[in-house]
View 1 (tube, rainbow, N blue to C red):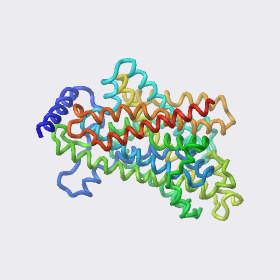
View 2: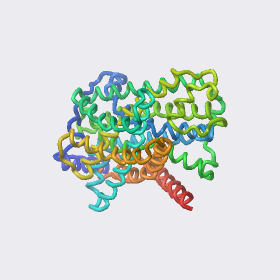
View 3: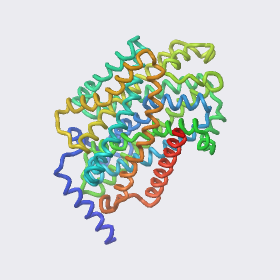
View 4: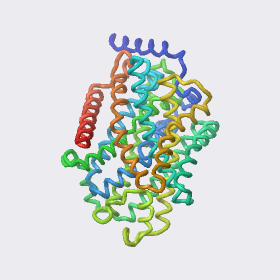
Amino acid sequence: MKKETGEKKQSSKFIKETGSQRKSLDEINGTIEVPEDKGYFRTLLAYTGPGALIAVGYMDPGNWITSIGGGASFKYTLLSVVLLSSLIAMLLQAMSARLGIVTGRDLAQLTRERTSKWAGLGLWVITELAIMATDIAEIIGSGIALELLFGFPLIVGITITAFDVLILLFLMKLGFHKIEAIVATLVAVILFVFAYEVFLSKPDALGVLGGYVPRAQILTNQPMLYLALGIVGATVMPHDLYLGSSISQTRKYDIHDEASVRKTIRFTIADSNIQLTLAFVVNSLLLILGAALFFGTHSDLGRFADLFNALNNSKIVGAIASPMLSMLFAIALLASGQSSTITGTLAGQIIMEGFIHLRMPLWAQRLLTRLLSITPVLIFAVYYHGNEAKIEGLLTLSQVFLSVALPFAMIPLIIFTSDKKLMGVFANRPWVKYTSWVVAVILIILNLQLIWTTLV
């Protein structure tokens, strides 16, 4: 009991020392009221929102290519990877939320404070590259959706996405809860579209269930491993760990009151797990759709335009083909790209403020983070103008890079949340600590194997 009290004091001391520093996402930190003694479901509703922003990162356009491609190439086998990735995501996001709520700091701030200058700089560079890799999928996905829906040239569509950050600035003036509601609506659109399309495709139910059983061949088949790591990278997003540690602090609570902190953690994690379950369903639907429609017949359909056209081609998808299916696909793609853009831009701000203490007007800061991400994509799009297959080929590569970058966010997160001096009574339980380390080590080994086999 004395030991536990000491841990609480140490945690409280850390909070007081850092409390005078700038808060993470200061303009929205602690701005949303939550009810007291209003019953479980009304309280959960008040905490619902951050989980939707987190979940969006797990169903962005990068997931579409890897999941649909995984189904088209290997049928239902990689569903087990989708399941394991989703469970890992739930574990990591729970740790991320707990870190932010207990310390009042986000992962980027803590990483910079607790590493040397050069180590912090190296981690910042890797994290910025991960943000760029994330934005590649969002920008290309949104640009292609605009091309499919309105006929805009791809470069024009990509350029338009550079200014969608202004939409976020407008939404921020309406209140963060409004942003959460809009993103949740976009998530519902994506879920509805793919549930409907999978229902029409009539997948093999037993095959789907069998797909959730892990297979050893995933580790020995190099093309399958490449796609599996792409799915992991697309599902477990490094930037979401930084985002989760920040937006978990948007609800009002007393950081010095253990009961208040415990309640906030409980409801924040419940919201996160519910929304990530929806993301798991969406990713499963994507893979099932790819397997049901394209496996063994058109497994090379890896581009968004190909998929859009295939859904309107009876020779490929049979009697269910219709222009409406194609349009729904493009609308869901645009919804995915735009909702992911909102969260990606917020994560970019968190990372810049936390790692390099960037101080500039909010609109300029958000525009800068967006331009840093969009510039490489525009250069690539101009260079390969007219060759959309090459441009979309960036997507799978970007998702594999995210898988490679993930341990650089995971390891600091595990270290910080396992530190009893920092977290007090809220430090990781032994099973959480050791499970997360096992996951990190396995992921690092798989990434090294992939790099080695690719080079050789």
